[in-house]
Image 1 (cartoon, rainbow, N blue to C red):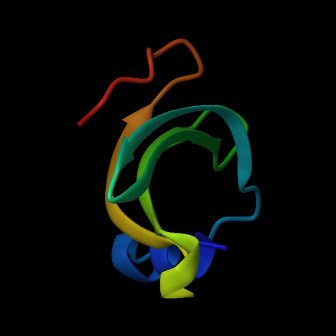
Image 2: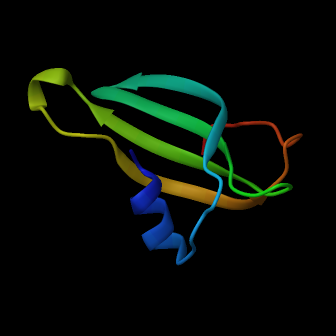
Length: 77
């Protein structure tokens, strides 16, 4: 659901966009940290906020880190 937001902010077009791993952090909603494969050897880490269900708002891309590999640990940022 956040692929268009990422592509717009990173000014890129991803042929591949596959979530590999994720972590969550409960705040006033849920913060997701997601490792996403964007090409054969390139990965990005996304920070996505999902508000509480009663707010009825979709997930939003808060931040991202590019230039990651499959072996880079997924950390809170």
